[in-house]
Length: 298
Image 1 (cartoon, rainbow, N blue to C red):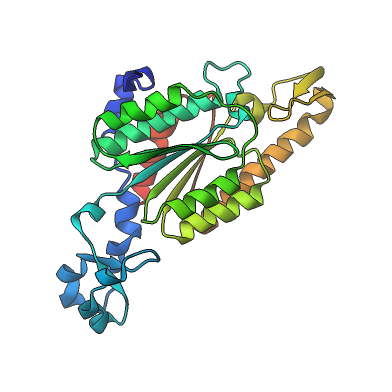
Image 2: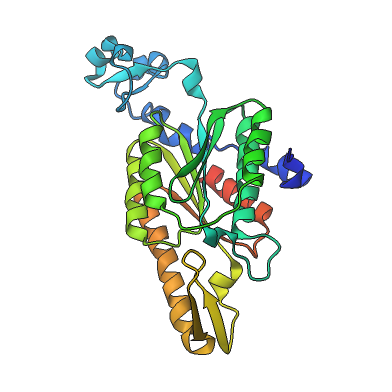
């Protein structure tokens, strides 16, 4: 069975362990409303509740709180003080691509997922795994036990990205599956029509989930280090096309820049973290840099 050390250097684990994914939840979530609350004398009791959200059991509504605030709150049980994380891994064949890097996009995503799974388990937060291509292939329920990291890596190590993917359709299915507020972490190259994907990401965010999109591209997809006549193969359809790399480089780079800018802009407006990464970046430094900036912001 794979171990964390196969995907993470010990120094990465030590650095990641010092960071806290919950920072955003604490600030952005229910507790952030305390300081603005007109019910100052109610703060202690208030901190033991959270706003009612769709899917909560009606019997958990605290009607005394409703009488004081004219808003619906449910009692916050101890289990809800932890965040629950879901790692969403795209298995499209395009994720298996690499031009000259050691790691494919999928391998790179696995390294990111391993680090984040380690972080959540280290914080005693449950984390699960969902993999998908045209449909959901694996759904490992969230657990916070130390063995969960091995369970996640065992699944990922046996997978080979192949065939087409349906990102938006699967995100809709996942949105229906996850009833309680969670941390959703998507690992994908997002090489599909962006608007349906953006719409479903917004749907997840609207349901109260914290969403992080790790947009993983190969360094060749970002920089286009080709010249002359090149025979390109579309990974999901198998179709090949002979192109003049020099003649199309500028247009290609513009298109990639526009795609990334669209995701960045739309995610920002929806309160979603958009994290562009390419496989020429040392994944550990890139991830630690992102987590540190997230912690500083929130």
